[in-house]
Length: 66
Image 1: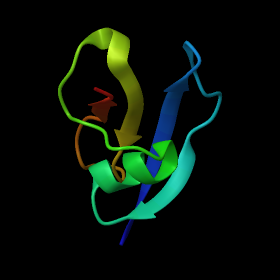
Image 2: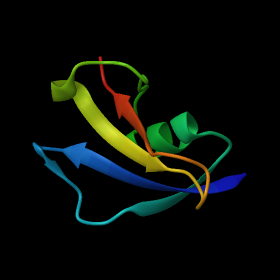
Image 3: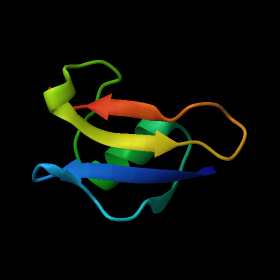
Image 4: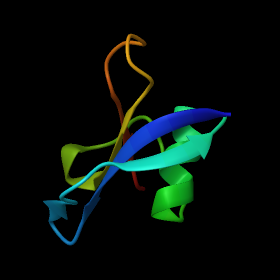
């Protein structure tokens, strides 16, 4: 398991703080916190989470609801 930092977009705004989530993948981390299936592609108005991998592992990943 890896510790990911996840920030959710709810009710038209980003949460104030990142939350630490233990998961096997970035997608799993986002879905654990959001509570629904999320996708790596979608329109901007359906962004629901951004996941930061551990330091030094590249850019954050954005997840969308459909």
